[in-house]
Every structure is written in structure tokens, then in C-alpha cells.
Length: 389
Image 1 (cartoon, rainbow, N blue to C red):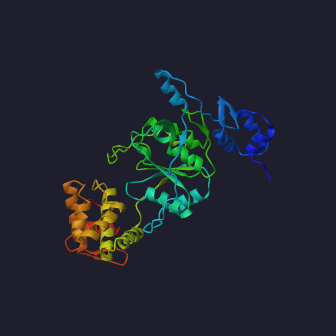
Image 2: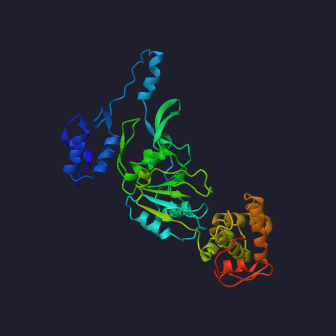
Image 3: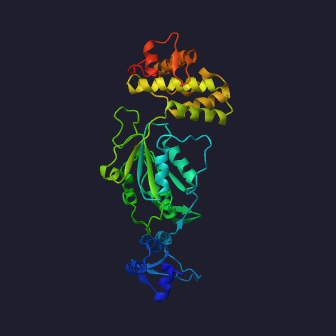
């Protein structure tokens, strides 16, 4: 039976080893360097670059009187790592419908390769859920990190915390994901500042040094990074995502690929909406068809720069949830689009009123509008170029 690296070190009969000696023994015995770094991180450190297989025996002598000025330094030296349950396999969501780049993400995750991926798309079109449900389907552990302008190295890599009256070093979600060999989902990465440049080494798949403890952490097999964003790291020119920042080119260059996520096609979106209807006990499937037709007219007008707002797939699901409570189509729509300005909200409500009174064909296309301008009918049916309301 092949011996482990720790057993090989024990056979050497030495009291201590340097980092280079451990790496050399690993190389001579064809042991992965990542495993060597992982073992180094778990060993007792005697001094810089020198490690012992056995931790020192712990005795309980009578504590001498310690000057108050030295207490902070003693607490600092006595740090230890703590962990929690941030790493988990997400549950399968029965309402999730596979579409778009789902199969691409599945192949990346199944490959077990380190393949940093950047997913860009408008808010509410299922970027985060796609990654989460791909992990759920493959039973892969995952860690989700929510980014904000205040996110820094302490939040991501880890820092000192006061736990039960003692100062301990708590590893951050990025380190936990690396050690577990799971999928690290960095959500809304374009909301970050240059404080996340600490992730550059992580995005290279290299071992990283925890500067505050001296521990070297190597990524376990299967570790990968997937980031989601509303922009491609160049800010938001139209002002829709005012918190989106310009990301450093050196940082973006470390992502292997960028995936564009658009809104789903009407046939797919109908499956998503009806799945939510089933979830909330709603059986008005005609309402689902009218909502899909309505949202698609709005999106085409948005693409033609005729309106400044768009109705996302997530918003349609919100409307269904609201409808399950109030059983009133117009009230549900009005409540869920009230965040828009008054002119936009009025235009959207008027458009839905007219679509609700119209007929749809088997493909969900408008076949009759009694009082709607013909350009909107043509726009929805793709017979002419989109026109604004």
C-alpha cells in the first residue's frame, strides 16, 4: 500500500522538517504538491519555514503574573482557526427550469477543473440560480459570497474574531471553499472595489499565504470560481447599475471565459412562470400567457431604447406570488411594478390591459389588439423593427 506523505516523514526519523524538505520528499514519491502544501498548513510551526509532525505537549503550570501591556500580544499569539457551515450542497429547487447556458455551466462543474468563469447579464435573469442549481444537480458543495463596495480581504480571506472571550483567526469563505475543493460563487462581483485584488492569486489556482497566521493554503481538487455580474467590469454607461464599478484589467484577465446570459425565450419563460404557479397553487395559465406576451413587448421596446425599464423573469415570478394572495391580475402587476416611475408604470399597466383583452395564438403571439397601435402588434410578432410605446 502506498504510504501517505505524513507516514513518509515519520519514517525519516527527523524531529523537524523545512518546507523545502517536505516538498522534496513529496516530489520524490510522486505526491501532488497541493497535498504537500495542505499537510504543511496542518503541521505545528516551530519557526519560520520549519515544522514538526507533533504538536508540543500542553501542561498547566501556575500562570505567572503578566504585565497588562503584554496581554494583547499574548492573545494575538494564541490564535487558532475556526470554521462553520458556509460550505454546503444547495437543495434542488423544483421550480427551476434548465435553459440558456445551464448545460455549459454543468460541463464546467463536472469537469472538476479549475476554470474561473464570469457570467454577465441583466438583473433577474437567473444567473445565480443557474450556478446554484447546477451544483445541486451534481451534488457539488458550494460557497456563495455576496459582494458589496465594502467587501475586503478580511471578509473574503479571513481575520481575527473575538470568540468566547478569545481572539481567534476565522478563515473566510474563500479559504473554506479552497480547502473543501468546492465551487466558489462570487455574486455581483462588479459591485466590488480594488479591495478584492486579494483574490488575484486565488483566480490563478495557486496556493495562497494567510499573512496573519503564516499558513499556506493550497486549493483542493475540484475547487473553482464562478462570478456573476450585471456588467462586464466596465461600469454601467446607461446608469441602470449605479453601484457597478470598473474592474481592474489584470483581475478580469484571470477569468478563462465570459458567458452572456440573456432573458429566456418565451417558451422557456412560460415553463418558469407556470412552475411558480404550481408552487403557489395558481391555475390561471391564461394569465401566464398574457404575462409572457406583455413582458416580451416591453423587452423589445427596451432594446429599441423606447423605454428605460424592463420586466425581468424574476419580476414575473413575483407577480405570480402576489396573484396567489390577491387573485387580482391588475392589482398584482401594479404592486410588483410600483418601483418604476409613474409614467413607466402607467404605460406598462395600459399595455397589459390591452394585451389582457386580446387573443394569443398557439405560440403566445398577439393576434388581435382592439385599441392598441399596430406598431406594437408588429413589434411583438417580429414583423417590423421594434418601436417605442
